[in-house]
Length: 447
Image 1 (cartoon, helix red, strand yellow):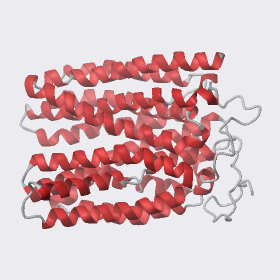
Image 2 (cartoon, one colour; image 1 turned 180 degrees about the vertical axis):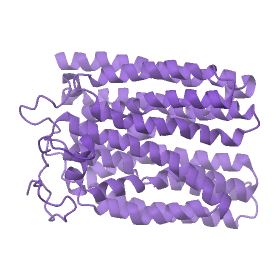
Image 3 (cartoon, one colour; image 1 turned 30 degrees about the vertical axis):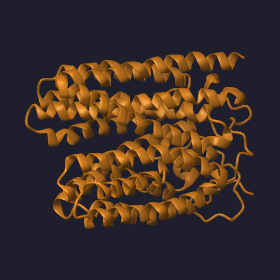
Image 4 (tube, one colour; image 1 turned 90 degrees about the horizontal axis):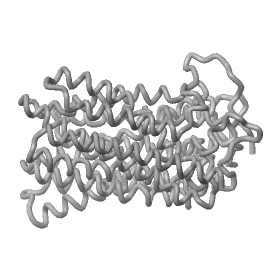
């Protein structure tokens, strides 16, 4: 057992024994500002692996949609395949998190990487060799698409679990900084992933994006699985996830509820992530209907990416927010701003004006997601961190499907003007959930 010394190389290979939780050093100048603490805790290689190993997840849904649509000539078949990937991911992610809590991330991620690579290969084979896409052939395609989503490694949620383990004895600000980075990494990959699929599919071949996703999964996910930081998360729950003794900067009192009530409180951030997903899915559908008014429905993905870019930058800012600005208050303020900005999407009458509205809206999306993940990490039982983090991610996936369906139904009858109601309503629900969380956590802290 050892504590990582500040003079040691952060990427040095550790012994087989689980390392002691590192302690963040005192303030020191860094070109990375507050984010300079992250390479000290985990090593630069972890930041790089954690970023690119999650890229396949962002490519799978759009990749399946592109491949099956191109091969079958049917938008319906492609849409069903993309839905099957999303459904599989929503159901498989919590199971993977539960197994990681029970058996450790290393073995679960390695097996998941192998199974997911095989599932992607199977989807490529059955799609490219199918003569027709009806009846049994379509069922086989959908089954393999479901398997692709179900076995997909959940790098983002499990990376957050490692950060929680590595910052146990550090001020709460260290975890906030790590979660800010993770939020930005999620946003960037979910902007880059679909863009990469579109580029490779249009310039080379529709099957190439999924083949690349398989190659990235078997290499980068496997490397992430065996990275030295896995020793912190796989050590088990013997270390209670509490602030260091005498640490006044570990976070607001409502962030540390009694362990007996944490399981019930987890439902609030999970519901919050479902609302976030509903916002995402409905916004995507609304933008498709809006850009379709100008004969440019195919550009809706680029419009959506604009919001993602400002959201990613804003997520980084959370690391610099004052600790006295409590997490539940952050949730309510960010969600309230989201609701106002989402309602403003009804105002633009040109694509240029919509770009401005989306840039403004993205400023509040990233901080909201980072804050909900922070609250989820605080209320999660120490021995179920992986399960809770993957549940939060699954909430986004499930909510996206709900939002797409609701906005799509309204757009079918009333166009973009009707569909825009759903993102605003989702943000309003998010605000209500933030208020409920503030009340619930305050009551627990006083119990």
